[in-house]
Amino acid sequence: MKITAARVIVTCPGRNFVTLKIETDQGVYGIGDATLNGRELSVVSYLEDHVIPCLIGKDPRRIEDIWQYLYRGAYWRRGPVTMRAIAAVDVALWDIKAKMAGMPLYDLLGGRSRDGVLVYGHANGADLSETIDEVGRYIDMGYKAVRAQSGIPGIALAYGVGRGKLYYEPADAALPTETVWDTRKYLNFIPGLFDKLRETYGFDVELLHDVHHRLTPIEAGQLGKAVEPHKLFWLEDVTPAENQEAFKLVRQHTTTPLAVGEIFNTIWDCKDLIANQYIDFIRTTIVGTGGVTHLRRIADFAAIYQVRTGSHGATDLSPVTMGAALHFDTWVPNFGIQEYMRHSEETDAVFPHDYQFNDGRLHVGDTPGHGVDIDETLAAKYPYRPAYLPVARLEDGAMWNW
Ligand code: CS2
Ligand code: MG
Image 1 (cartoon, rainbow, N blue to C red):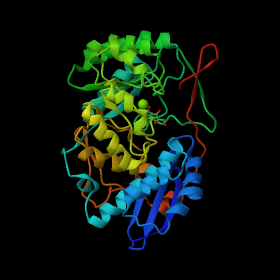
Image 2: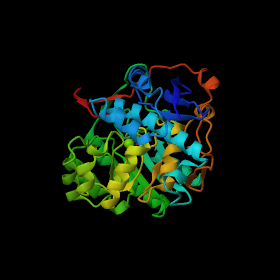
Image 3: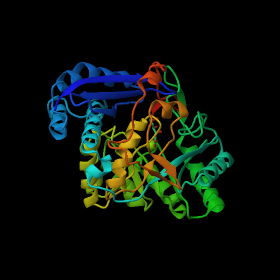
Image 4: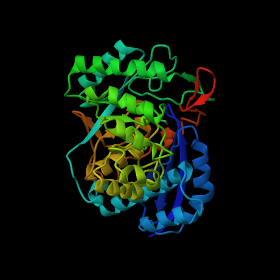
C-alpha cells in the first residue's frame, strides 16, 4: 500500500482551518487537522514544502515509522509548527488505518472505556450578572460542566469574553488587537464571581475557570486558595509553564485542582509537571502534540501519576481534531474531561461529522475512521482571511501574556 498524493486545504468558514488530506493507491483517504491559530500559513508551507514530498510512495500503514521519520528526521525537533504538521499526518494515517480495518478509531485504539465523553462548555458574559445568566444557559442545554469567564470591572477586553457566545473566537482582527491587563482588578473580582455562581446553581454542576497565563506563581497560589470553597473542577493555565518548576510554588499553596498544557508540543513540556504531581489535568491535545501517536504516550505517562486528560477543544481546533479527540477520549483510561467550544454552522457544514452532544456528553459514531470528512467544494467558497490573536499590555504599556 502506498501514499499517492497529499493536499493541504485552507478554508475560512467563519475562521481559518488548515486540513491535510492523504490519498492512497487503495482509494482510501485520511483527513488531519493542522490549524495553528494566527500562524496558519507557516504550517501550510511546512507541510507543502517539506513534509508532503517525503510522504509520497510511503506505506501509510507504518504510522509509527512515519511519525519517527518526521520527528527525528527533521533534525530540528518540537515546536508548534513542526508538531502540528506531524499531527495532521498522524491523524490522517490513523483515519486511513481505521477505515481499512472497518473500525471506528476508538476500537482500533483498544476499544471503549466509557459510553460518552464528559465535556465542558464556555459560558461568558460582559459582567457578573450576564456571566451568571450564561452559565445557567449552559446548564439548561444539559452541560454538567461549565467554564465561566467574565468581563472584569475596569478591564476593557478580558480574555474569554465577547465576540460570540456559543462560538467564542479570540482571533478577531487582521492585526493583533491590543488589550490591557490588570492583575489586581482581576484578583479582586474572581472569587466574588464564584461565590455568586455557587449561590445560584449549587455544587452539583462542575465549574472551571481559565486564567490564561496571566498570574505569577504566588498570585496563582492566592487565587487557588481564595476559590477553594467553591470546589472548582480546575483552574487552568494559572501561570506560564515554560518553567515547569513554577507550578511547585502554586501547588504548595492550594488544593484547587490545576490544569495546563494547551500550548505544549511534546511530552517534554509536561514531563516534570506530571512526574512531580504539580498538576491534576494535562490539557495537551491531538493537533498540538503530534497526533494520536504522541498524545497516547503523554496520557499513558500521566496515568502512572494519576494525572487525567482534559484536552484543549477551543474553536480553533477543527472538527477533525474534535472527532479524533473524542475517539481518543472514548478509549483513554485516565480521561478527565474534554473542552468543547461549539463550532459555527458554517464550520460544521464544511466538516461533516458523526459526533453528537447529548446530556452533557459528546458521543462518537461508529463510522470507520475518526468520523470527520471535509466538503472540498464548500471549503473552496471560504478563502483564507488573516486573523491574529490579541496581545496584552499592562496599564503602563509594557507587554504581558495574553
Ligand atoms: C483557550 C483558548 O480554550 C481555551 O482554554 O485558552 O481559547 C485559546 O485562547 C485559543 O485556543 C487560542 O487560539
Ligand atoms: Mg485555555
